Every structure is written in structure tokens, then in C-alpha cells.
Length: 320
Image 1 (cartoon, rainbow, N blue to C red):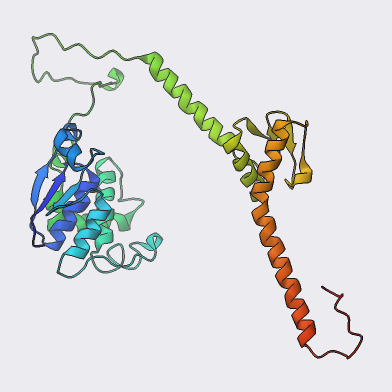
Image 2 (cartoon, helix red, strand yellow):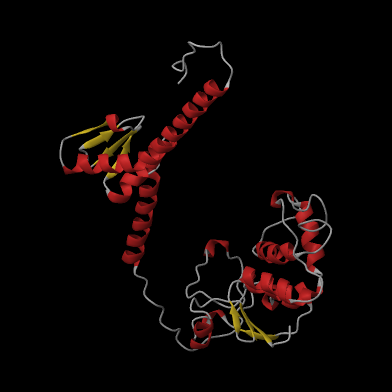
């Protein structure tokens, strides 16, 4: 790459690790600008990426902000042998070779390995249940590009990164011994007050939204019925399932097979609105059905006209 390449990244960020590996594997010279998680919303980062996320790749006047997009850009912009190959079957990874797509280290490994490494760092044991993944992990872990991009604090005794939490909760029943590392003589800083009412209200709201989403799915209904329900619910929120019937405003009921003749209720604005939605939803399917029927009918007519028959008296009524 002719222009200067700069990478804004954060240690411990899986997307950042993917890009670091890609740059190292391609042998691209780049300036590294490490960003702490606390500075992601700084003015400098927000100017580069309004979402306040890393990695960010700067190449000349070009800015790229998504890790996969950066990897693909690096793949296309570098002059040496390409890493990327067509990934035909992710389910068969590591069954046909040492790496994700076979016998060579490709861009698929660049994207996949940081995720696997993060899971291992979090405590996932690969040795017993996933022997192929364990072999793959140990092999890729030794690549120079991976060693260069490996978060330093993953090797620390605590195994944890920068402190991102304000509150620590420890079950004292599990503590058997305590060593005093440093005697603190100053009073501890005041802890922020937790608004439990707000937390409880948010939890209730999230549960309520989940239940609403579940209740929008009909049990044992046809795809046409579910499609009609979704169309009505977009306009009239008070739409629910009662067994396989669609109930709207407790005034209109649509029963299977959900045709216009199955729409019953009190005459009024609600019934008229539901019928209108029903017609709009089903008219596309009815049009296609009618078109296919007309096409089949016309083909039958052409067949009878062009096929030598028994002579005068042949009838076109049969099957038309």
C-alpha cells in the first residue's frame, strides 16, 4: 500500500484482533494507535467513527470502520498472495484440513480465530469435547501475526483486562483466605447509588416486550394465516390469536382458511378496515393463482387447436 496506513484498535477487542492478524499476515506496514475502552467516545474517535467503535483503518483519505470490511479491503489492496478463499461450507470446518477452509491459513481463519481465542480466554475448555478445535487453537496461537496481536493482559495472572466495572460482588462463603496487599488508611470513595426501582421497571418492560413478541406467533397456523396476522397487527395493535382464529379489537374474528368469507364481526369501521387489509394481503396470491390458471387454460386451448384430432365435431369444452 503506497499511502500511510494507520489502525486505531483496543486491546482485548476481538474485531481489532482480526484486523491486526490480517495486517501482519499480509506484511503491511502500519501505524498502530491503541485506544482504551474509556476513550471510545472521545472527540478524536467520534470524528473517525460516529458510532464510537474500533477498529478503524485509515489509508490515505479513506476510513474503514468495520472489521470484516477492513479485512476484505486489506485482502484486495495488498499485492502479495491473497488469503481469502471461497467459504463453501462452514459446518465442515476443520474436517477437511488443518484450517477452516482446508490446508492453508486464509482470511476465514483471520476472522474466526479471535472469536475462538476469546472463548478460550473466557474459560471454554476445548480439549475434551472439541479436540480438533483444540489442535487448531494451539497451532494458530503460535503464528507470528497472532503473537503480535495477542492482548497483553490475557497473559496476566488475573487474566482480566482493564477494569470496566464499578461494583464487585463476592460470595464470602467461598472465601477461605485473605491476604492484605495494601493497607488503606483513606476512606473509600462513595459508591454510586443504584436505582433499583428503575432497574426493576426496565426488567419488567423487557419481559413484557418478550411476551408480546411470543404472543404474536400463532401455534399450528398456516403461513397465510401468520402473514395476515402480521399485516393486521402492523395497523391495529390490538390483534391477538385465539387458538387458530385472529381476533381484532374483540370485535372481528377471522377463522381458517382466512378468506374474506371467514371474516366475521360487527358492521363498522373495525370490520371494514380488517376486510381492506385482508383483501390487500391476499390479492397478490389470488392474482398469481388466477394468472397460473389462465396460463394453463390457454396452453390447453393451444394444445387442442394444434393437435390433430378426430375431425369435425371436436369439443374444446373438455378441460378448458
